Image (cartoon, rainbow, N blue to C red; front, side, top):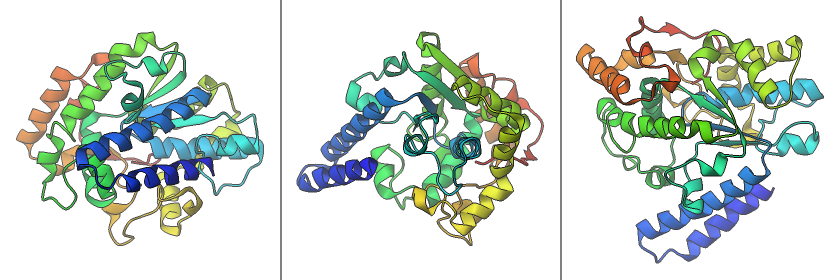
Length: 316
């Protein structure tokens, strides 16, 4: 309820400022969103940070089911900050963020000082797969206002997938810069767990066990196994089609049931970016990752890995 009231307040404020130039309204909107993120950050027991389309929804569904099973709760609500905490205080308040707006409120644009004293799970994914998945998010799911707010190509504009992926404001350069800042600041964060999407895909149960233990809520084998089963790509697609999580907003709702690319859970492939580009384009994009991305995340060698295979337990 508090989140809904905050959103209504933000919409009311922006509505009263209709006369302002577009760029000023965007700055105010980002500041208001940053203020709300700051409130949640200060109250959170743990933070899940990721660039968009790095597997956060998959992890959110797994964590939701883990805590539901552990504490005997129903399965229709996704964990969203403190909603499950209010049902059982043993469940941590988890702040899920793409780290888009906080800096607009705190002014910490060139550091991660806002997170230094927090328990942070940093979820990362091969930037090439992230960029491709972002293209389909922008094309089919992203609201026009969000596109303007985060400097994506304008709503309805004709941008092909290669131009999008190479765009400094939407594609690979932006993703690499995002990850590099986190890498530079990683040693300053008192409690940090870096989790790779690819490792979650190949060893889901063990990675989930590491995450919940890091968050201070270790589980048993049965709880972990049920969370992994529940969040399989097949079950998540089925739940998205059936609108299972409609109570949690549009996060897990297909925009067009006849278009697989409009689903939140799309292809769920590791290395799937190769399906969309020529050999020359792939080589150039791989070179960009090798040359510019911090080695902390281990993707320099993986951009030359064998052709992609279908995932059996991951969600895009």
